[in-house]
Image 1 (tube, helix red, strand yellow):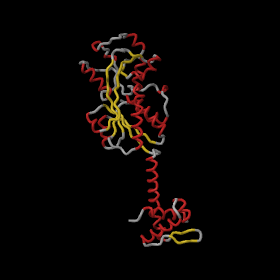
Image 2 (cartoon, helix red, strand yellow):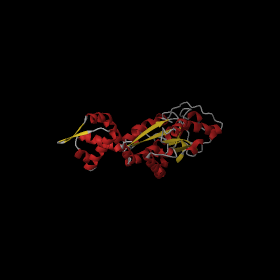
Image 3 (cartoon, rainbow, N blue to C red):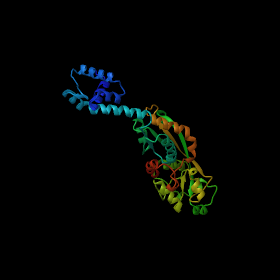
Image 4 (cartoon, rainbow, N blue to C red):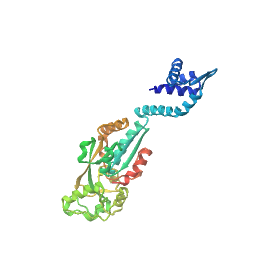
Length: 328
């Protein structure tokens, strides 16, 4: 089988019409280029070039060969260049799936740190159910997922585990109306509770909690858009469970308040999973950042997003995270 390198040298000479210039382009000595052309002619049994006073010219067969393989050789060169850029993290892609907007700010911090180091890596994010995301990770259609803890966890590499704890928030008027520091489950203001829809992972967590106490939830307002839900809380439509640590600024400003500080529940266990084997160098670097920096980000776990005016982050990252702010 003919060495592919011989065809690369042939194409370089055909393009330059000069052996000396082709050797400079290829970083190969001129005698080595001449020898390679003779070797290819010997293997093909056809003369490829005619020598001219100022260089070389393709023979009839040489023209036919170049017309058929020239673009292919360029694609081989492109493939080799792409492989080099990929290994150097000058090019690449990471596909991330999440079933919960609880992880938005955590993801934002990880990806902001990653983008500073590797600005040319493409990030693709999608939302889906736990089952759908796990299936895509299994089939290598996703590289990294954030999902509720699952029985299939042993099938994957556990990158990080997160606990999201909820507390109740409402506006200042609600705080005055129901000023109890020691709310009991028996006198919980269930009719004022606003919730995400029944298929939402956070909703299912809350349902399980109240079911243990034989309380059925029948909310007046169900909203899967958490920005809108937050606005409803501010306007006094009701109360909602949030991971309030991230909302320190909002609480301090008086936009919202923790209604019952002593009433909290440990909520969702979310795991970050990847496949046990990966050949994606960009993903490996992101996993290093998650493991190295995760402690810095534990305080930002939250239930829905803060007002956009309070956020400071690169515009490219913000664009693809905007869609995540309206989901589960």
